[in-house]
Image: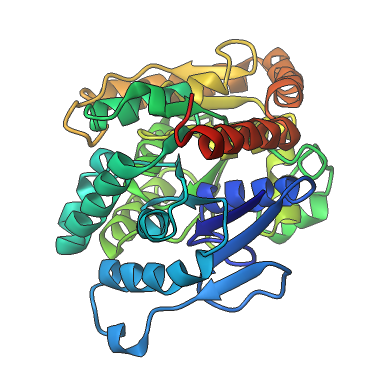
Length: 398
């Protein structure tokens, strides 16, 4: 069996959860089957891994058009594969065209959905309309779709009701249990401006609307004065969201001194050290198909406070591995809270409950057990190979 896996992100160039997913999945899949990776950008020094760029004639084109050009440059090379597996809309066009040209199944893993990120139209205009068109068309034509959570599967069928539900299956994201485990490395934590001997609430994520960072910054006004708020946040989607976060941080620093903003991309070792030192991990996302970062925190034995949305409740067990904060959301695709002040207040209350009750640190141990039992990459790779075989044998999932 030869699988050609297409992705925008691949090590060492990873900026989000989809890239982490692909990197870990490929590592384990290659123990059992042949996987050729086709990714964007700079050349990689890895066997069966190939990088592609758009032609210079597209240098001044809309980024979505550049993506399509890069996608097309991969298609011919996919000849001979038994199946093409694509991740995110950036790669979906490759899979759709390759499947038609070479007569092979096209499998999509859905990490997010364009209809559930409508704010991108204000940011990207025609580029967002083009990415939405690519995604919808690819989903309709695909042999099968893997959702990374039950919540994500429901979102897919709600966003694209024309799809046959039997075409959409669930295979969760996973975590490298050997790499991610509690590590006491106070010097690494101090090197990033954080005192490991003091309580901290840690956020890790890109600066984007869906990650909900502005809500956490507002909730932080209600935290005890001794608690450090640590923001490991970078890669802003737009200058506008960066400015909003910057303004909120500046306002927060007027009323509390211990707001630490780590803008650089943390290495894995630094990230594990930061998560391990945290008193609480905060995930205020308003859209999260699963949330690998919650798995990473739990694997490090850190309790989690997270929004009860998307696939998060499939990861974080309320009052067992952390606390889930309820949210009533707009149904316009934005996911914004119907009552922002209530959501902010509820999130602050959940954080304070974790901070005020040291015995709840036991949630961290339960979190580690949960990821060991349910989210190993070995089991997820086995499930994925089963989906591959089904798609190749029958031309569809199920």
